[in-house]
Structures are given as C-alpha cells and as structure tokens.
Length: 274
Image (cartoon, rainbow, N blue to C red; front, side, top):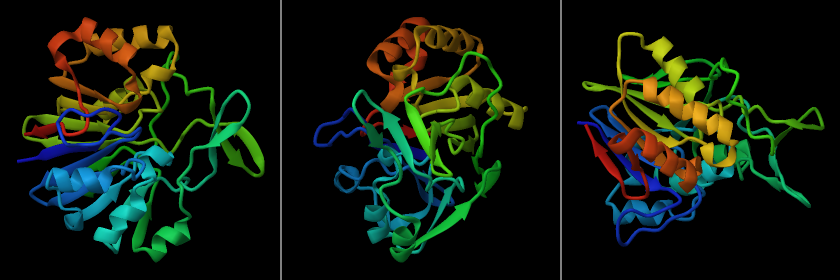
C-alpha cells in the first residue's frame, strides 16, 4: 500500500485543517515515510497532528525546488526528525526573487544551509536523475524540450552579483513506481508540466503514468501555454491528475472542462491510497 496525503496546500478539503500558500506531501510506503516539500511552515505541524501523520517517522525529505513555499517548513520538521537526509538540487541555496511593480520579493529558502545543518539536516545534492529509495526517484534537472513552455518572467536569480532571469534549473519532480503505474508528484513544475511528463515517459518507457499530483504553475502563465498544455494532456494516457497550489482556479477549471473526471483538486487533507 502506498498512501499519499496532502499536508499543506492553498485550499482545504476537509474540516479542521488549515490552508496556506504552499505545498507538502506526506508519503507512506512499505520502505518508510517521506516528505515531498514542506510548505511555508505555517500549517505543517498542525495539519500533521490533525491528520495523525507522525513527523518523527520521516525517513527522508525530498525538495522540488528552493522557493520558500516549499522549503519554509524545514526547520519545523527537523525538530521532529533530526539527522534526516534532504535530497535537493545543489543550487537550492542561491538567492531568488520575484519582480513586482515597486520592489523585488525574496522567494528563496528562508534559512541558510548551515542553520539547517545545525538543526540536523544532512543534504544530498545532485542535478541528475536518481533512485532515492527503492522504487522512488527524483528526476533531477528536467530538459526543456518544447517551444511553448516558458519560465515565469517575474522570477529572478542572483548569480555572481547579478540579477538574471531565473530558469529554475533546480526544479524536479518525484516519481513513485506502484503496481498500477507511476505516481508523479510535482512541486510547481517550473520546467513545464509537459516537459516534465515527457522526460518521465522517456525515463520509464515501459511503465504507464497512473497519478499526477501537485502544482503546475499554469495560473501564472499565458493563455497560449495553457491551451497547448491541455492539448498535450488530452493525448497522454494517465488515470487521474490532482491539481494543487500554483495551478490556479481558472486553469483548473479549463483542465476539468477538457479532461472531465480525470481532474480533481488535491488540496489539504486529500489522501490517495494505491
């Protein structure tokens, strides 16, 4: 049995829970318990207790990318499961920002590497596809192969003292191989939802995609990209897609109108058992 529970998300799907702008999945398998992302840290502990998910049992933490709404709960989790391995891209601690009308807003990890290590974090960095537990994989950097999926122009990165457009190369997704097929967990899919799914299809040629869960970042991008994404999804063979976080209500509604019952909201409290 594989159980995946949404601990943090922008909306709530069950009474007695809290919402925040962020994302966190609690994963239970035969080999152990894991977190994929940690949300902002405003609701993680409360929701975990409410849903009876024991944070002290976490064996490993996997990070989709560096943004605060996916990494902000790290220090809170480390209070419960000290000396835990955290799997991420090596550029996760670079300074990242969002460009707004009158200012730039800090988007990066809200803690230093040293601060997290002092609280028990053991970082395992890689840019590459890798098996992080038996039957569980991280994509590593995702090739940007199609012409219509472009990164959010508001996002910036500081490198060598210069502010540049951020391609978010640290974006990665988690793959769990189940008896029914692949379960794909997305943080924000900054590399592009279709780029991500195409790369996974190339990696696992003989395995079908069963569930897709998480953020798609379609809520921040242009209509043309949304339409082309829907067109590609129509051609993809999968069972269900659970939309979360940065997908946005408009994009989610368009996806539901096109894909019907294959689409659902994966909001706080949603649990998938396979």
